[in-house]
Length: 289
Image (cartoon, rainbow, N blue to C red):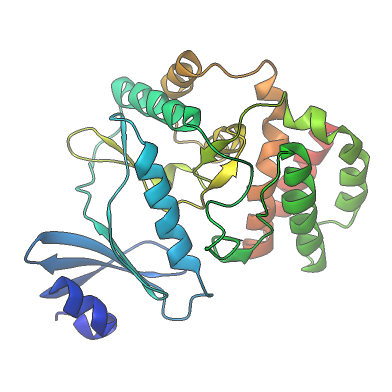
């Protein structure tokens, strides 16, 4: 069964797709391996996606690809529309990651973060303002600490409380931390291009041992945003963080700031999945108090 009828017609026509094989994984999209005259490609389709979701992801991939060093690769975008995104195929390794792979990724990510970024906020004024499927305010600013608190943590916390997935006491805890927002965000640094959703599943190692970044929610912000996300669910070893720090040394106290930077992804998970994520938000807030 070719499954071509599950793909947009213009995609099949533009890329001369011969067959499509469904892939597992993903909770909000359908994934396929496409067979084309140019070789296999990866396709993600979202028939009912909010406007701009896939074009924003494609722009994030292209931004990362433009600055990625040899240590980290980013798949080339072959097709993008409101309901489909097609990328070059990655032959993913089945085995574990070794120290060399971890160090290479840490070095590569540090070099991405060192690339010049113009401001905190959006990648382009021509793109919808969203992180993943969620609308956000990405108006450019030079005040990262205020951006993180006012435009990311506070709105997400209100949404989580309103959804009934977070103890209302979280509002008071955050209010007590708000005057310390600049301290909690750490010393001012030049903005970086951040991946924005850097958990282990969005870092792929191919059969040749090369690291790849996929599925970004990219914007210009503080690099500790990515590093905190990397520690939320595990999957990155000590060698990775050591190589990062050797390449682009982190400011003193960055470990103590991790709970603050983990609040956005924890809040998003509380909103979407409920369960124990609300409790994780409360523990992070109390650790910071």
